[in-house]
Structure formats: structure tokens, C-alpha cells
Length: 121
Image (tube, rainbow, N blue to C red; front, side, top):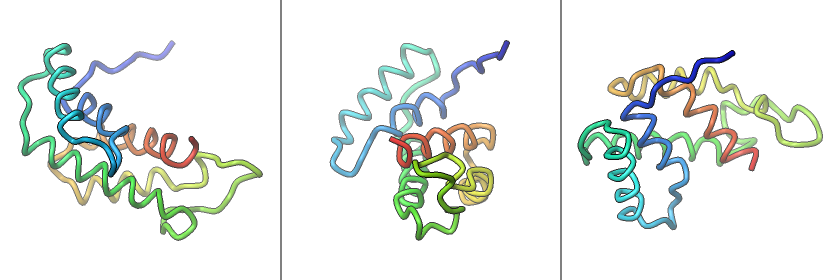
């Protein structure tokens, strides 16, 4: 049986931002973030904190969107896309270095989910 981690400010915000794209309305995302934070009792909306997380999401999305040109792309692992097509651990480690204010334990699950959303879907 696996235990589910309790939600954190970062996981709640990244959970909304992962579905925000360049054509998305950022005000709508911010409203969803506000509502999520309030519903989960995770604190007040902090624009500076959300901007850091949005930048992190944009960096990860940009890297994954490069596909075969990404330095984290490890090659196709079969006929269909696979999460193993990217070195998720190395990407997460590098993102953690680039964003030291974001807890490391929040970055790895987000990067895995980002590969799933941006590469596999």
C-alpha cells in the first residue's frame, strides 16, 4: 500500500500550472490556484512564489517540447512514446539546482508528471 503525500503549496500550484500553456489565460490559472490554495488550506496566493513555479513549469515544458533535441532525451524506447524516453532523474536534478527555492521533493514528482503530460499525451 502506498501512502499519498499531503498536498503542499508547491504541489497545489504546479498541479494547476501543468495544464497552463502559452495560449492559456494566466488570470484564469491564477484564479484556479487561489481557489485550490483556499480549498486545501495551504496559505494565501503569493504572486512572487507562483511566478517562480510558473517559470519552473515553463522551463520543464520547453525542455520536453524539444523532444529529440533535448539533452535529456535518451532515445525512443519502442514504437510508442515512453516515459523512459527522457532522463527524468537528471532533468529533475538540474531543475532543482536552477530553482533552489523550490523544495527538491516537489520537483521530481512534477517533472515525472510533466513528461507524462507533455510527451506521452
